[in-house]
Amino acid sequence: MKPIWIVDDDQSIRFVLEKALLREDLPTRSFTNTREVLAALELAEDDEQQGPQVLVSDIRMPGGSGLDLLDKIKAKHPGLPVIIMTAFSDLDSAVSAFQGGAFEYLPKPFDLPRAVELIRRAVDESQREEVAEERMVAAPEMLGQAPAMQDVFRAIGRLSQSNVTVLITGESGSGKELVARALHKHSPRANGPFVAINTAAIPKDLLESELFGHERGAFTGAQTMRRGRFEQAEGGTLFLDEIGDMPFDLQTRLLRVLSDGHFYRVGGHNSVKANVRVIAATHQDLEQRVKLGGFREDLFHRLNVIRLRLPALRERGEDVPALTRHFLQVSARQLGVEPKRISDAALAKLAAFGFPGNVRQLENICHWLTVMAPAQLIEAKDLPPEVMAAAGGTQVQAPEAAGVATTAQPAPQLSPMSPERETAPAAALSEPAEGLVGASSWESGLEIEAQALLAAGRTDVWDVLSRRFESRLILTALANTRGRRIEAAQKLGIGRNTITRKIQELGIE
Image (cartoon, rainbow, N blue to C red):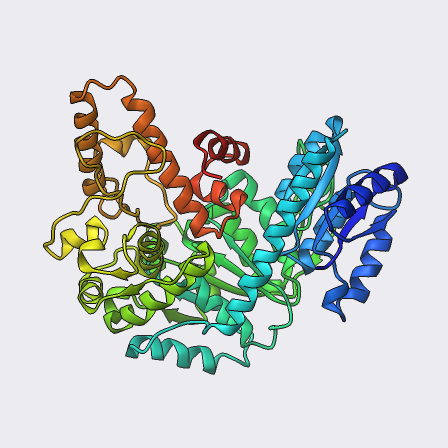
């Protein structure tokens, strides 16, 4: 295993961590300042075995801060877990560390066993990422024999030697980011970074800083200079997902970058040159957005140089069997279980399903089947309720969640929700939310289960059903993010501390 790199100008901190990690058979390498680390990283680029498995860095050091080091490392090694050590007075900096992509922060003075446990978790995360990257290299980038997908593959081939701006259109969940990654991988910029940002997932007030970075003191909490996504993607590709949701005033700034290749950080006075290829994607009709005044016409024409339309999964039904088998294999590897097989009858029902959530929904269904199907061979009766309802079948009952008491009434089967990135407002809970697959099915099941518990005289109905709901929601998000908690929390729309507390309360670990 590669060593844990420790960066701190305090010799006692380095000594204590080194000894504690060596007792755990974790090799270490120590540095006193950021310059030494950056020099060692440059040498390590030629020999991957000499690089770090995890990097643990103090914030305040002579010759450069830990946040600056984090920023530089994430630009070149985005998958490397970085733990930031901070004193209580540096908590504002800790927030900046998370915004910069830190794995976790370690408050000083720290409890040594807890520090070792945190580093061990970061090591496990790093090793999972390495295995995932190896599998991604071995597995095909995209699957599809349907004529519509073959057209997409041919377009990617034709664009392989071009740096032209591309606009990818298609429904949510159809795989637009996969196409963007393929365009990057087969382009002259393949050796540069691929940086993706979902413009709809970031609050308007933060999006400008996220894209263009900010100078120190540009606003409250901006304690250090931060490079934005344009600078992080220098020499590579910047993927702007859901571009149709970008605020109108930011569209003006983006147009300026695309026009002259320069931009200013928030609060900055010196222009920064952007050597970046932009690939944008949207599920919206941008022409209609232009007519309604929600999207700049000149920006639309700047982005719409080459347009690639990605077909919905219902338009490529012949690809469903191959995609299903592939996702079942992927789910099994992620969960560390034997891959399940699927019967021809079950495949036929899946192929006939409309998949409003597209490929992402099929992937989530395969995750669900890997966990919930009772046998190694998935039969048609094991499919989730929304698939059975569409095929005219009947719902089956799911096994009881671990650790939850049941009544004589069988528990309703929990169905995977649509993987759409957009979330429905809380006010819509009284009706099936638009964008949720089978919402009426799971809500009806919830009502039946609540009635059964109430009829049995239970007085803990709220706690029982809330725990089951929260457990399934968190487990599904963790499966979707391959166990990465911070990313799962972001996708669920909750805080990092909240998901950690819920995992402990619910006994999910």
